Image (cartoon, rainbow, N blue to C red; front, top):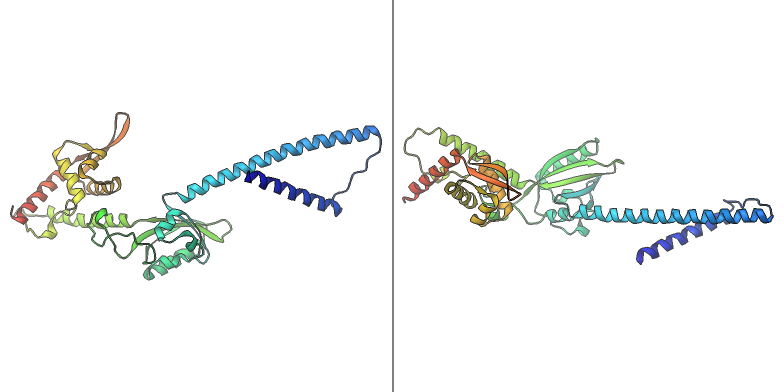
Amino acid sequence: MKKENTHSAHLLELRKQAEALLNKGARKYPDFSHSHEEMQRVVHELAVHQIELDMQRDELLQTRADLEESLDCYTELFDFAPLAYLTLSLNGKIRQVNLTGTKLLGVDRSKLIGERFARFVTPDDLPVFNNFLTLVFSQHKSCSCEVRLGSDAGNVVISRNSFASPEEAVVPDNRIIRIDAVQSQDGRECRAVVSDISMEKLIERENSELKKATSHHSTGNGTTPDFNHHLIDKVIHARIRFAALSYLFSVDQACFVEIKKKVHTTDGNLSVHMRMLESAGYISCDKDLQARKPQTIYQITPKGHDAFVRYKESITALYGI
């Protein structure tokens, strides 16, 4: 009903504009003879033209409705996208932001519009962000940078303990984000995708530590090991990873859902830890179909088997069990 009223008001406004143009002499009445045949011809032409206009109006109204429906659809896709989308001006002010972006920055959307994005970046990384913004508006290609969010940006963060599991992670100082942006065609703004890569950086850091630990174990001389707790295999020494590897140690193979039920965790947490075990070479991962449903199947590798045995021996010796 509201849309119909809007359309009627729009048509009324167009009629007023047309009458105003006619009165100003922008359109002249054509010269017609006053014969009966000529008058009938004119009336017929006007009737046909009226039908044409009605058909054009219906098409325009349908096109307008389709455009409004498409706009609503794209607005919903924009707002509920899993990544943070922002539009930034030349001076770095936020012009548009979706709901994921508001969650990432921890500020209501109404307060974010017009705010400088640099406010949420740590002072140490401000030069990186400013250089990035300059680069984006100086060339017509995608640019990216990695910066840390400061204390103004929400309070969902990753733990300083580099080997803590995700559900044990609480309150460190900063999160690391990646910004990919490209300027618009008119060059007045840029469209950016912002993703939280804190967990990826955490995994990279742990993998680096794991490589060092693996290298240290592989160069042993067969003598009685030093049971310093720092030498315990950190890839296994985490609750979820230990539980998952223990279960795989006792069975031939297991699917993702089965392991999740056994270790009592969420899909996201288990996925992160299984990737770490796979990255260390302790498990293998294959895709299979079971009951016509895709399944992720895991198996412990010989390297993982030896590492788990060595881990158990280290823990037993360390605690004198």
